[in-house]
Amino acid sequence: MSLKFDVVTIFPSMVLAFLEKGVIGRANRRKLLDIVVHDLREFSSDRHKKVDDMPYGGGPGMVMKPEPFMQAVEKIKADRGDPQTVILVSPQGRRLDQAKVRSLSQLNHVVLLCGRYEAVDERVVDAVVSEEISIGDYVLTGGEVPALVVLEAVARLAQGVVGDADSIKNDSFERGLLDHPHYTRPADVNGARVPEVLLSGNHEEIRAWRKCEAVKRTLERRPDLLHEGRQLLDEEEKRILETLQNVDLERKVRADV
Ligand code: 4GX
Image (cartoon, rainbow, N blue to C red; front, side):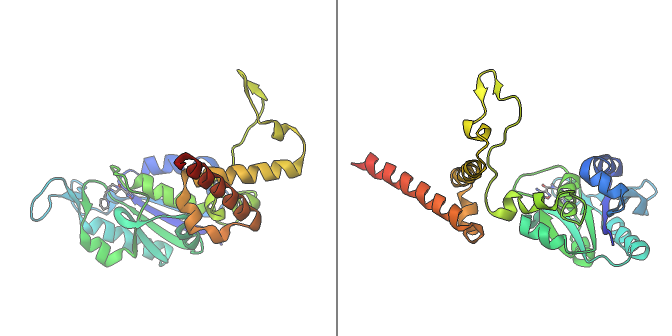
């Protein structure tokens, strides 16, 4: 039972070029995934295959016409069965996070609609879209990259796509902590040395060091993760966090006197 995706875009070649590479490409070839990319222009009834038009009420930019997206979703339903969700990637959507990715990975069939220009006619949202998803608070020129972000994040959670299932449990946002620093050979690059503990062969010390570095980084760069995900931390991590916070507090108090 492979996870089905349908992507609707005016740039199918761009999306396909991305999807044939790497872990996702391999999973698609091995039939662990079943991804179909659709050219939106093929669903335009217009003789010039136009998919955009001027906005009613005036204003800058163009709006994507409703019928091509609606026809595309109809065709997907007829050929591939009813999807469990039809996603429009859009700055107006709920922001994607790993919890949302996890819940999407439980589905069998996901449709992703990619818009361009200023907007998509709202009747597409009303008629065929089940949810709008944003990948973050910055402005892009089209929905293709966001759709690929959603697809890649969801697809790698499907059974067998990522070879080593343990590596998923280790993902930063599954753990509520950022990753610790990593090093590979050589042990010295122009004088920049790998931390001595990693060369020590003392696995208990290495484990403790990594944990401490992960908590330090998270506190420093993403304190928001520690507030949301404190329950994800084990006792050892909580102890490290408290120690670091106390050290910081003492430093502040000393600066005061
Ligand atoms: N996260 N964009 C989509 C066209 C558009 C406009 C309105 C639907 C409704 C974005 C983001 C994003 C730019 C992709 C506008 N589509 N999408 N595009 N950030 O900025 O998802």
